[in-house]
Length: 144
Ligand SMILES: [Zn+2]
Ligand SMILES: [Zn+2]
Image (cartoon, rainbow, N blue to C red; front, top):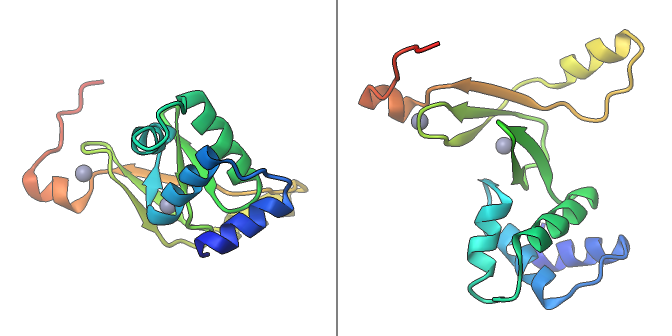
């Protein structure tokens, strides 16, 4: 989705485009991958010094509801991404990197729906160690 397409889509959801909001949408547009509200704030505050983290959260929530972004939580942190395809997110327990991982999520929805549930979305998070950390031997001892 281009920036113009995103702005048009947001306008359909009665989302007023203010300068601060536009900066956040620009960030989303320039940042494929996974990011947090903090990441957006640190970048946008350089050009919009009056923006607050709370404002960024509110903008991201509204943008997520309009279907441009999707979000998931890892250990209490909300991550956002523009990859709207159903996929699993692989989270590295050592360096914290997040990578997209293709899996068949439809089977998960179907098994829940077969039991009579209505599925809105499926979040799949795979936790482990990324190839880079494995190659560097950065695997902590099991402490618990
Ligand atoms: Zn890693
Ligand atoms: Zn992802």
